[in-house]
Length: 63
Image 1 (cartoon, rainbow, N blue to C red):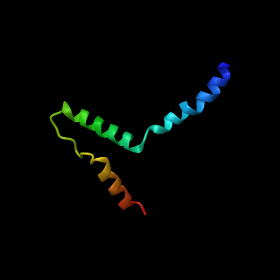
Image 2 (cartoon, one colour):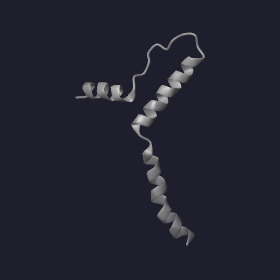
Image 3 (cartoon, rainbow, N blue to C red):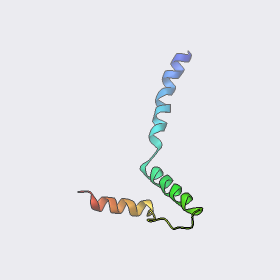
Image 4 (tube, rainbow, N blue to C red):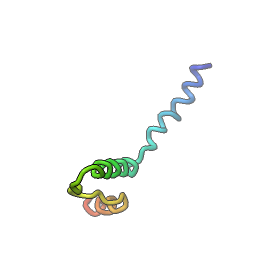
């Protein structure tokens, strides 16, 4: 019984790994960059744009 339950639950558990989107990863990187800049006196060399602007720039650059 336990084995059958495990076999049925496995696809659902593995599909949850696919829920991490590129937007979530990008926004996390932006948040980390902002957090690094909070304690320092110097401004960051470049500020990452919002995800929509990033996607637009990326689509223009790709052939």
